[in-house]
Image (cartoon, rainbow, N blue to C red):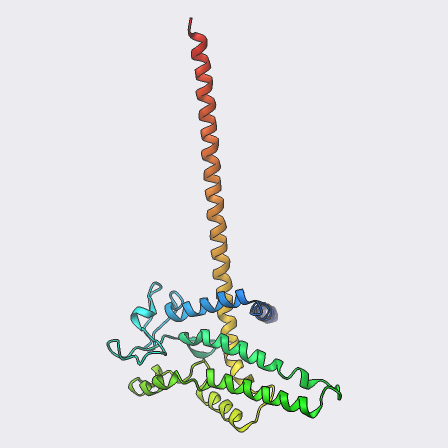
Amino acid sequence: NIEDARDRNLFNAWIALSNWFKAASKFIKCMQTPSEYKLFSQFLHAVGKRGIPGTTTDSNGNLLSSRCDLNNTVDFDYSNNNEHTKGNPQAAKKVICGQLVVLANLSHDLDFWIETDRFKDFFTNTDLDDEDYQNSKQLCRTEEQIHDKATIIRDLFLEPDIMENQLSNNRKLPPYARIETYINVPKDICDSIATSISSGIIDKTLFTDAVSYIFPVLIHFWKIYRESYASTVYRKWANLAKELRQLRREQVMAARKANRDGIQLKTEVKEVP
């Protein structure tokens, strides 16, 4: 029995791991399509505003109702000084994949992952062994492009100017409610990557540590998104089929009524002397 239970647990773990890799592969492929990216980004933005029904807590640990709108209760916005609301607004958080995730940062996480994935493509040509292609002039120009791309990512996601107001407002909040990064990556890792970029220490694995925090979270929400999308599409087609059945039923009943009225009319005509 013990061995059977262990084999069963290993089998379940293997199934779960296989499903995760399938979801990750599907996610990477779909994010290459602009329309799929736009829809998923909008979904993450909506989660950042309204949370996940029945599972989202505010930064004080209070469970929010499934119909609670975080905009009305929290009103968190990076672009504002957060002084226009009563009290100190705090972004909703949730523990996902073993880390505390700021829901308002999810859409930023997606953009950061896509840009770092494009950053790795800059090294594709420099990994070739063709000596004629790997001349010093081309290599120098490629290194400059790589540095520029890394700098842009740093300025947009690791050290964005929009965080200055939020960091200053953090002093007014308790430690568990503070927002220190624009993406769901620990601040020490963000600072380490930013320092490496400033020092010119740049390679293909520059953003690997940061992505290791973000990617599992994105896959988690990708599964939720696909389930929500599938349910929405199913309800749409189910409602359409229901309407078509109702329309067909009405047409059949109308035809029967017309036939019945026609037969009665003929009978009445025959009875007239």
